Image (cartoon, rainbow, N blue to C red; front, side):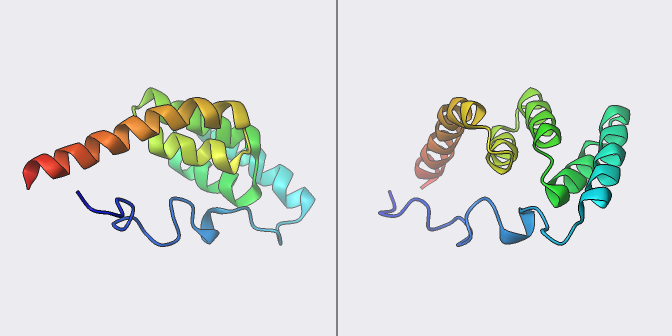
Length: 113
């Protein structure tokens, strides 16, 4: 097994600088964008809504996207949304799940060698 199992992950980690909220978005624009993101989310366009919520830093929207990702069995993506939303409770509960996923991936990779 590699001495550094995280060497294969991107150097910036799971959350890139571009994923963080954009500080130049003004308050009125944020409210309008968040309403639009909510409409898109409710219509099922989760990915477009996610991009909007990430841009504005709308934590409630990010949490809803994270919950959807959990339902779709995408725990790493869900953790990312909870992290961006600063939701400590959901982060903690997701870390165990994500660590199991990573352990399984590493185990499968080791078994293939």
